[in-house]
Structure formats: C-alpha cells, structure tokens
Length: 273
Ligand code: C2E
Ligand code: CA
Ligand code: CA
Ligand code: CA
Picture: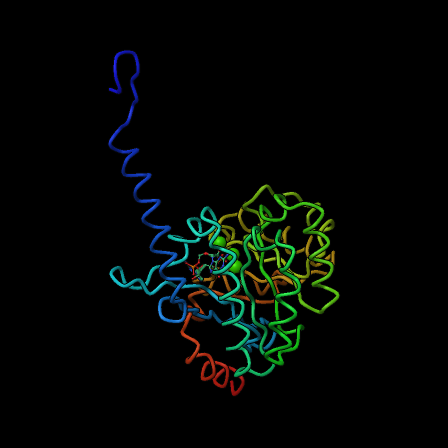
C-alpha cells in the first residue's frame, strides 16, 4: 500500500522469482569470472554404425557449482541466454573444445551453439580464429543448432552459416523434429547433418514411432544429409536404427558424456575393436 489511492500488488512468489533470477545471474557471472575453475566440458562419444568406430564427440557443458556440485546445462543455459552471458559461455566452450580436440587426431568435435551466438557478427571470425590458433582443421568442427534457433534467425544467420561452410565447418540440425519443424529447413539452411531427437528414438518400439523415424531417415538420405540418432539407450533401438540406415549413434547404451581425459582411451578402444 503506497498511500491513499495507490496499491502495488506483490506476491511472495514474484519476489522469489525475481530474486532467484537475479541471484542466478550473479552466480553465473561469478562462475564466468573464473571459467576454468567452475565450468567443465564433458564429451559424449558418437559412433559410426557401419564399423562401430568412434567418429566424433559432442561437447556438453557442466558447471561445477561451489555448493550444488556438478550442474547440468538444462538448469543454467536459459539463464545464460536471458542474461546475455551466453556469448561468453559459448565462446569459452568453443575454445575449450577446440583445445581439447588437439589430443584426438581425426576425431570430429560437435559444439552446441545458441541462437544468440549465431546472431553475433563476430561469430564466424571467432570460430575461424580459434581453429587457426590451435591448428585444428575446420573439417573437424561441427556446430549444432536447433531448428528453433534457425527460425529465430534472420538473413544474417543464413549468411554466417554459408561462411562457416565455406571455411569447412559443418552444421547439424539438433533435436530434429521437436521445434517448429518444417521440412523446408532441410533445404533452406545449408545443413550437413540431422540429429534425430531422443524422443523419437524412444518411440521406435511403437509402430507409428518406427514409421516416423524411418521417414526422417529416408528424407535426410534423399537430401544427401548425414544422420545421427541421439539418446540411444537400448540394443533394440540400435538395431532398428542400423536397419533403417541411420549413419551414426550416440547414447547411454554406448557411452555417457565423459571428462576430456577419458576420451583418448575410449578412442583407442574403439579403433582396436
Ligand atoms: P542436446 O544438445 O540435445 O544434448 C544431448 C543431451 O542428452 C545431453 O544432456 C546428454 O547428456 C543427454 N544424453 C545423451 N545420451 C543420452 C541417453 O542415452 N539418454 C538420456 N536420457 N540422455 C542422454 P545435457 O548434457 O544435460 O545437455 C542438455 C542440453 O543443454 C543439450 O541438449 C544442449 O541443448 C544444451 N547444451 C549443452 N551444452 C551446451 C553448450 O555448450 N552450449 C549451449 N548453447 N547449449 C548446450
Ligand atoms: Ca546437441
Ligand atoms: Ca540434441
Ligand atoms: Ca535435446
């Protein structure tokens, strides 16, 4: 009650919302001041279906929170985007991943990028600079972006994508099928790969689920795209995906995301096999 004729409504839950949001931005800012201490990148192996070899890894961000322990990106990427901190976070992940990649000759490294990063004018320049600084060939880098990210994007983003392509960097459409899906994205954006979302992989045991995945695979193949299925947890899913012609797989069945130090031994194991 602010006086005679003015009232402000303020509910306890609003208070908590605003405070916790500000608190989380503050913590994130602190973490960023100390990236190398608090942020970690784990890598999930990606395997080729034809010979079972490990062909790539996906970089997945973790936050070693001083009180909460290891926090997953689902809990803070949105805050990072809303607060604008994602540009710094994203660049840090890119540098870390490219630097780590030097130890894994020939392996492809996939890095997730936020639409906010894509919209930045400096993005392409940063990518090519980081690759050059580390002597990592652009062909080894793949950037993963969601359809929603591409939709939100403007003509500038289409231009960035084709510049990245000219550099030799590949682009993957992440979580395919979950966003404002439009089959025309496959044609309109110069993507090299489709990542079939885990929710579809999960449903292949059902008749409509299986039909949907089969349709995605044949559509992608007919357009000359590579396919990776994510979230493969069961042998039956693996067998199905192999049968319908999916090129690569990723999921707990094969490996969880691991710290950088464990990638080399997984790589050697897969190459001996
Ligand atoms: P995503 O890009 O779809 O990454 C795959 C997520 O599925 C990862 O979760 C991974 O740990 C999880 N996963 C892999 N295999 C399986 C499986 O067999 N079963 C199940 N249930 N889950 C599996 P994570 O690491 O928690 O990442 C969540 C999301 O956060 C990512 O989804 C991505 O959208 C985002 N993210 C992660 N790292 C970054 C980053 O560096 N930058 C940006 N912008 N986003 C990131
Ligand atoms: Ca991804
Ligand atoms: Ca995904
Ligand atoms: Ca996902």
